[in-house]
Length: 207
Image (cartoon, rainbow, N blue to C red; front, side, top):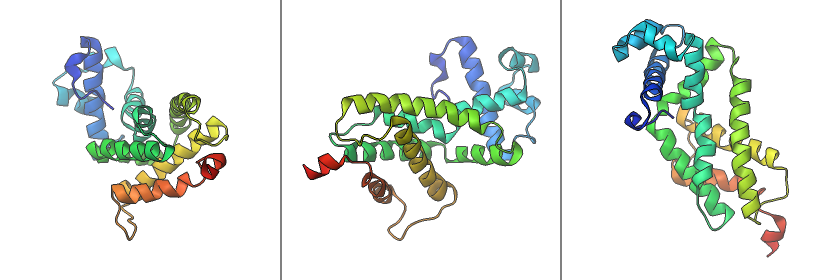
């Protein structure tokens, strides 16, 4: 996510972050191809030449926007700071943090559709790979600290959790498909509970 308080950045990084934020707003409102670099610089009252100090092309700007704003990247960030005495509490806390983060910028899910439609998913392998590495690193630390997870490989667990949370985002926050109980935090808890049945260690269940 772009820094909510860019004044905490050094000047060069602050300018880069402002470009990413302006570009993200334009991309989600009118699409990639309909957005020009001039529109981005005009929004910031910036000379076009200044933009190319930070980015070589509009495509490079879009890649930076994906890395900062795509909802995928909020998953490992929220999981990394989640709390809970049990795995159920931990996953539920992760879910609640994700809902709060996604609801700050619900329009950013459109970036995923722009990538699929305008780029035929060209950036997705690298995007997912970067996110998968972050998620796996977070889960390795988690597994080392806990004894209530199954012994399945961490990469498999990482992929499963990424799929769990992102599928909820697509069905609820983008498509708007709700369950009878209503798609809110309680519903998300049911959603995660369905997954947790297969995550909690069998030995822990017996105990």
